[in-house]
Image (cartoon, rainbow, N blue to C red):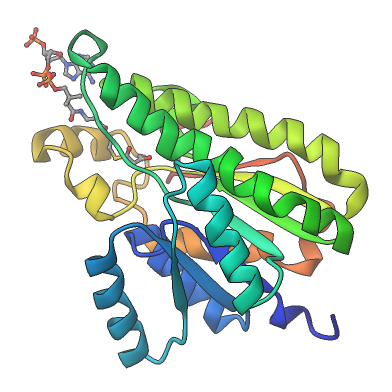
Length: 248
Ligand code: CAA
């Protein structure tokens, strides 16, 4: 690899608020960026919008909660675009309710999409990273995986699990030039966060010392930082980016 900027990055859940910002930032920083999508209609609109804005980013279908669908997607990307150097496990959903009201399907959907997806995607790229002696795995967790959140037993369990995965895999692959890190964003101004009832969201923002939601570009900057060649000694870390909402 003569130029680090030509490395290929796969962002899962690319069409969401955080995913879009990450794709744009990585593209602007010179990476070859590919995204994963789940909903075709949304993906088509997204690609048109990106082209209009001057971003040449191809999207690939894959249900990251399903191992075989993910394996097929990775094969397709590798045959069309080339090996994946950096994987950003960003796809995620919420199905908030108190545990007393939580349906088993809402538990499983969140665990499958937010946590099992991390296994499904990483398992399919890690051998290639080891063989090439370079790789970056960046797991997008949440402040709510660090501190818990009323109404999010499923989401908090999945997000906390992501960092356990990060720490263990970081140890396994450190000697091969592959780093594995977690980013734990606080409340960022995405559709997912804006879906929280206004009264509840206002109470949450009032607990953030910076007194505001985070910007998607602020998280995207951290992703690009961890994707770089220069962060080669950072592994197994969990980067908080939450405006001071949770400090420890
Ligand atoms: N702490 C303590 N008690 C609380 C509480 C809290 N944070 N929130 C609500 N309660 C209490 C209420 O006062 C109420 O008590 P009473 O019955 O005595 O009046 C009781 O719990 C039930 O409250 P609700 O009627 O609101 O319960 P609900 O089941 O209808 O709704 C909920 C629960 C859907 C979880 C709602 O509270 C909610 O949406 N919370 C926000 C969850 C959240 O922050 N999600 C983040 C989504 S974005 C994201 O996840 C991105 C990221 O990574 C940050």
